[in-house]
Image (cartoon, rainbow, N blue to C red; front, side, top):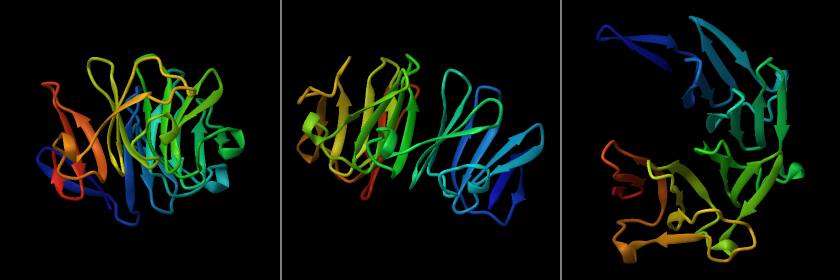
Length: 212
């Protein structure tokens, strides 16, 4: 279901879809990623649906973000789909250099660089080229499920084997591009699913055993 909340009332917007991801873009348009029904664009009270029939890689959308050009990126089990500002769709997969087709999280950093967490590492998309980072570069685990950038500009990754702090200006030839935090540093679990920073600069980490 997709629910709305206005004037202290909850309304059912759509009862026939399963929602997996939500994103509000720079033009105040809401993007609704679903399980099996593609993505819905809610703009000025009207819905527009994009599916594989329109060119999406897959109809289940795990993550959504926007780049500096106003293009919307969608992460799926079959790679990335990018909805251009004219509504056309461009796709990316392992064939174009993406680390893995299973994309679970996405981020546009403060410099406009795009980052994508996959099941086989982290992909950076810059100047039209993918550069990938894995455990060989110091990641705690190749399954990256959540990514955020804090107010100081540091990028953090939640993985299946701990928390990763990205060092500045990394390249994929480094073997120590990340600082990792595990149970040894006090985490209640190393199977991390979500990460976010609050207004006071604290990082909150969701995992199988609760939250840190």
